[in-house]
Amino acid sequence: MTKTIKKQDLVNAIAKKYVLTKKTTGEIVDDIFELISKELENGNSIKIENFGKFTTKERCEREGINPSTKETILISAFTCPVFRASKPLKDRLNKKGSDQE
Image (cartoon, rainbow, N blue to C red):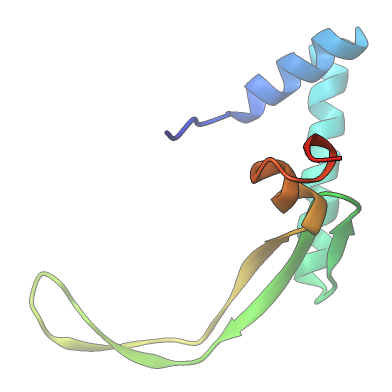
């Protein structure tokens, strides 16, 4: 099942839990996303304890196929963001860890 959580949903949940204004919470969420984006843009990784690590990966130039015309096209090299979940997060998703102790 796929559930999309919009930024506003995140802001609303945090604002309600910590009794903050939505404006203040929205600014905090924006600042967190901006910090992660800037660090990745500068070639750095972001590790969030017990959650995961955000890094970037360089993708090489390659040939692809245009699905409409079936023509071979050249796809330029690019950098893409990568997220790798931490072991505690993976364990939580797989119902391991504290449930089995």
